[in-house]
Amino acid sequence: MLGPPGAGKGTQAERLAKVRALPKISTGDILREAVQAGTDLGLAAKVTMEAGNLIGDDVMIGIVLERLDRDDARPGFVLDGFPRTVVQAAALDGMVDGRGPLVVLDIVVPEEVLVRRLATRRICSRCGVNAAVEWTGDCQKCGGPLVARIDDSVDIVRERLKIYQRQTKPLVDYYSTRSTFRSIDGNQPPDTVTGRIDAILAEICGSAT
Ligand code: AMP
Image (cartoon, rainbow, N blue to C red; front, side, top):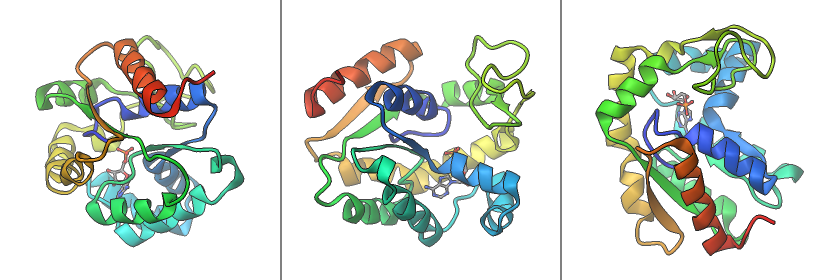
């Protein structure tokens, strides 16, 4: 799942993973959990993440390599937030070699809409889940308090969007000539985007049921 911060990758990845009964692997979630747990990875990643910068390719590739090797990812997986650089994309090609089609969905949303969305986004401070827009009060999964993400503040968002343009947007060129690449208009209601994704997956991989 490609796209800038705020494009809806997390929401759509969650839904797709559920419908297809596959693990959703979000590198941002893995890193945030590490930060909360105070592991070596978390301690090393915290400052970089809060500044909106990317973690090094070697670290990220190591995390994903290990995760894709687990049994639950054998039938397939939904990646959210990885790859984010051409180096990561090349490594991913190596990891999925012989494992079936790599479907690449690029969710496209205008920058003003992204900035607006991120300013109002909330996550659970306890379990880290993204709050759905209709949630009022606390997290509906674990009851934890909802908070803004530190890296969703306006200045950091601008920085993340610059980094996206510089380092992640080139992935569109990297993938766009492949028959399994699709661009999706993400400036539509989430259910419409989900419907489009389901149709693409049905076309490339067969229907979910
Ligand atoms: P996300 O939740 O996907 O927006 O990720 C939050 C932050 O985690 C990013 O701004 C980066 O600092 C870091 N991060 C997540 N995935 C990657 C990745 N594939 N490569 C480098 N840094 C990443």
